[in-house]
Image 1 (cartoon, rainbow, N blue to C red):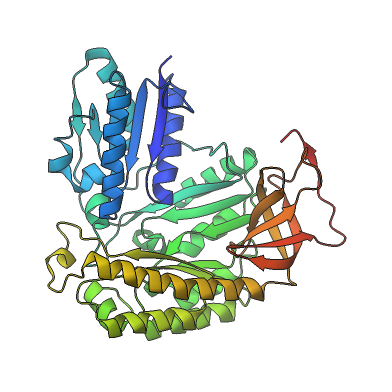
Image 2 (image 1 turned 90 degrees about the horizontal axis):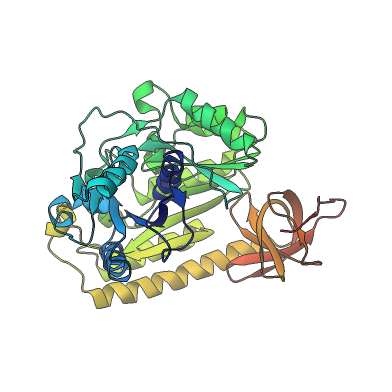
Length: 444
């Protein structure tokens, strides 16, 4: 039996697709390996959002070939899809595929093992491509499970290569969403994280919206929490928010993609909202979800971003009160309009701005965590941190830790009410709420 080892770069969609591929390989007689050293096949599921991501993918590919010269190496995902001409020249990979027709990967591996002929199959996207349903991923080591319900993007932000790597927007059939939610519940998953490349556009081609997917997952017995992935602000309508607020199982955490708090920069990025509209949306969401949290992504160093533009973005971030922010530097992507723009910012300036933004973000995050002290929240526990803490996430996606009284006991996969006693850097600590008796398990 051939052993397969997976290496995954990038977003939750990539994580979902890797887990699905594991199922496909297992169904076809392969064994999933926990160690690269003992693998016969190595599948590298790539990302190409940034130049730094590309470097990581290429470095991993070359190291894998050097370490395991006789292994079958597969390079798949966004990098070869968006960089086809260059990817085809990567002799370290025996098989190169893109983001389309994922389930064909196992066939290509089996054929290569049989005849040792190099395989390159990168299919181009067309406007009317359907959503590709993949095999059910079990996420064996997770208490939460991801569910991909949308793929592709129609936005064409000037800095972004993803529409070229993922094709146009397409959505999963609603009955398929229900079926996977039911399978997840059957194997004991209590939380589903709905994911997509442009999740807020779910259901557009069916005359539906994201609330339809949330509502149908909420109907499934055993699924106790539903969480949303990254959302585009312009699709968060009043009707959608009203319907979402009626779903008790929905976690009130919203990852609203921002990119910049400066209108001049947003326009140059081809983002479809202003800073004022974004701020108004957060206020509106808070009216529907009073206890919600906001997380986001912030880019610094976009072409022609002045010091004044940057300061405006920093001040905007401080005003919103995010609970968590991913700060990253603009990365040039060949083939995108931003790559051809004048006013490219030197890397040294980008790094300085990233540091300054990170300082503002840290202040916002710490303020949010302090606001939670004294509150009682429901936590889905995932694992113990050595023998010192049980740890899990509250509905607002705050990391919560409580002391382990007995290292042989586990709270894994339990929803437990916790009273928060202290905020620390990046998490809160607390104790099991008075009157709440968890089901302690042994052997975890």
